[in-house]
Image (tube, rainbow, N blue to C red; front, side, top):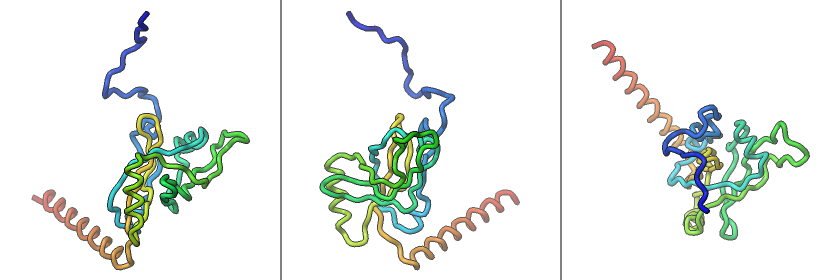
Length: 176
């Protein structure tokens, strides 16, 4: 006997409007803002993360930090190192370690591609953000090349010049 669906879902409709924005995937759970200052971000990839239950709850609470973390390809697998996820406040004796090494989940061909690209001198894998997608934790990891001091200064000069140009345009529109 065929089983009937108890409810119908509409595509594009938010599942639970009372749900936290981070958990619903509308906001990033953690962002590595210093990454774009210290590195040229060449390519970005999405990867799943192998986490324990208390780690997911801590990320939903906004307790993740990507500041000193990086990615590593070892034995054909992708790993996330030094990502700090604070222990869950309401956890028990089975709480997780804050900076343990976590496995990232990607397709094999993408991992091989990243392994080849990270063998080039000066290129590394930097996580740029953690977010939720369809209820699962995802990490955006970027192939990055380190900036020298003069590169950072040039980036700051460009940013300042662009900001001044936008302000001048907006002043011109208000005065006319």
